[in-house]
Length: 577
Image (cartoon, rainbow, N blue to C red; front, side, top):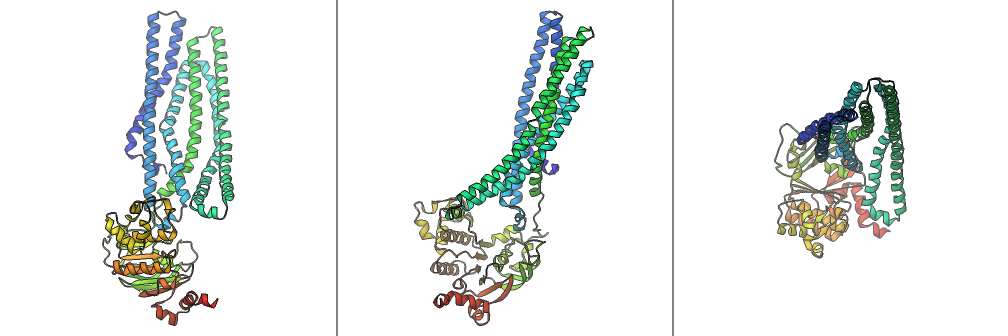
């Protein structure tokens, strides 16, 4: 896990190394200052010449300036290294997610991915900065100060033998009891983000059912749970301060008492030694406290690092062939003995025994009840998922042998859940073709029956679309998404129930536009209305993941009971009622 994270440092290795160098220099200087201060105190006590005292004072001043300079540079380089590391890590995760198949994405909720890209990376970033700065400085200060205290202190060094084990045990117990609470918090962040995401996405539903109070209570419960765990952990961690103060005051009292006693009895000890021992005592105890804080922070971040690495180590289930095909010859599609399930652990197949051939340029309709796996069928064509068994070929080539960009560049899908991005209408439409001219955009919108309502906006095609397309209706959103797909000029166009929000007249005009604009494109239309598919060259009837029957409208009316029942319900049902 550590190796995987460190690989994101990359071009920021130099600031990391510089930080370590300056931190070591700062630690050495900090431990020299009490030693020289002790010498200065002894010189003053011995009534040394003012020139000699001034020389030592100048050395102390230079060391203080150097310590300040080293610390400032280390702070700058550590900040640069940690922010750069976080930037690279965030970029690595985002790139990894972009390479996931739908099957990979299904393993992580969107709220969880957002938490990993934000809160978790921030925690790891803070730990990284503490590691390269404080986690290096504190142990060095502890070692250097302990050595100097032993050299200078003699009997006074016994204070540390008493205090340090007591402090280490206390800090270890604090960390042990605080960590479980910190670990629980990060798991609850996902639930909090999920609550926010659902509320924002479903704001109209929430308000339509007057469920604002319910959503407020749900969010408050998630926030309160996080608050309780953080409060519990912080209360335990707050014991660091009184524990540190007890040890520090004991250390000072011990050194002053023993030092004074030795001085009175005439033993070889002086005021400078006592002063240095007090300083080294503070340095040692402060180093131990900082080490404990680093331990707490790193333990907190370990859970975040684990969650980040879960994304980084996730490999796309879609394996590319050794020799890829970079051209789709035509829009023919063949399903051969295809079985498919979304998870290896699923008890049954979502699609079973699929054998069908679609010739290039055909218009194919797919109908079936809810849950009959219509969408699952078409998602195998652009390889959003891979068939569990059997093969799917496009243009005579197995989809697994294509370069993914090539395959998906030749297949345009307008999904059930139409999505528009924040930006102008033109910017959204150019997702289909970044080089599309204004004339091509207008022509595609006319074919999709979107031009008239676009021109009704004050800014026309430069009108702004809110995130998710919330400022346009469902039917308008569908028509813009169809226009976007038409601009792609694909070899295969898939409409996954994408005209459900438009009236039958507009639906018919859109289908007429397909014949004019993309006659050679294979058109696959998933629909609930018979009228949307009855003119298709072939209609596929789906039932429980199987192909119940296929053929023309007249053929299915004559022999397929499922199709005839749906037709009767939609054409004569209203009269019978």
